[in-house]
Length: 111
Image (tube, rainbow, N blue to C red; front, side, top):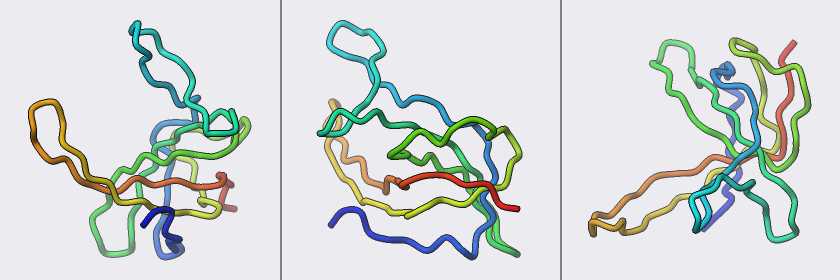
């Protein structure tokens, strides 16, 4: 099961790392942009998610589109079309690594 819609309306989301191009290392060790199957470039942003009366947590969110300029550390934002996808794989040491990956269609400022 992938791209499960998630409602983060009860959380305050604050930018901790401004949006940037998402990259990965290729076979030669160079940083290259991450794209989807259609060749559209992905972006990534880190936000601190906190519900009232709870401890917060920093999450990294992959964005499907360039969110544009103007997002800085400390800005309150909302994720457009937020989703999560569980994952599990064995790493090179044979250990099982599991978690959830957050994604969103975009990012917008909270007024």
